[in-house]
Length: 88
Image 1 (cartoon, rainbow, N blue to C red):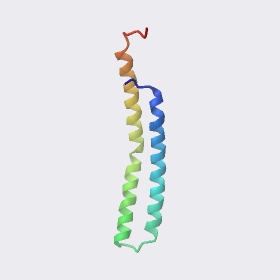
Image 2 (tube, rainbow, N blue to C red):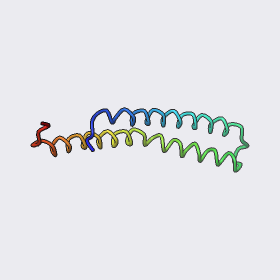
Image 3 (spheres, rainbow, N blue to C red):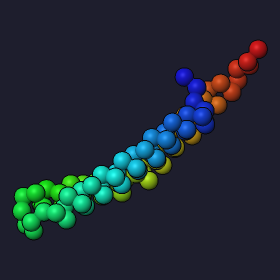
Image 4 (tube, one colour):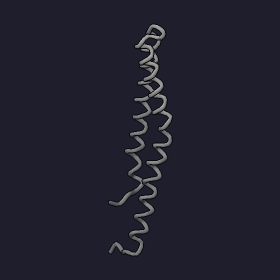
């Protein structure tokens, strides 16, 4: 299966959708957290959920870089693999 730069489009869309979902989730957790009694189980659960969303969101640039690097490496490997072959 040959790879090309067109493979980046769906992955870029995935990263955009993931960013939107993470930001909406964080907003919801913040609103839930503000309505809870301090130090209650619900407040602690929403705080932990917010910290988890924050941690996941902090990995998004790394995930994007790895995806892009994998596609570029695949393109380079494909180019070298088919270097001596003609298309005729």
